[in-house]
Image (cartoon, rainbow, N blue to C red; front, side, top):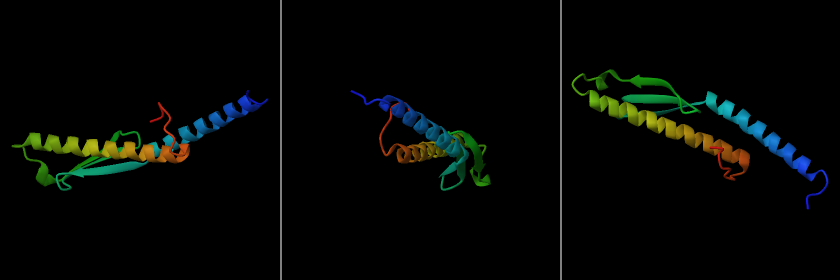
Length: 106
C-alpha cells in the first residue's frame, strides 16, 4: 500500500530526475573528446553526442598511393573518439543515477 501522497511524491521525484538528466545530456553534448590513430597523425574530435566535430590529418599521412591506409586511420580515430564520448556519457549519467543502470537511458 502506497501512503497518501506517496505516488505524487514519487512522480515529482521522477520528473526532477528526468529534468536533471536532460540538462546533463545537453551539457555533455557541448563537451568534446578526441582520439588519435597512426601515432597521432590522424585525430578525430567528437562531441558528447558522438557527432564528428573536427578531423585533423598530418600532411605525411596523406599519400595518394595509399588511400586505404588513410581511410583506416580516419575510421579508427573516429570510432575511438565516439567510444570515449559514450564512456563519458555513461560515467556522468552513472553519477546522476547513483550507478543504477536504467534501461533506455544510455
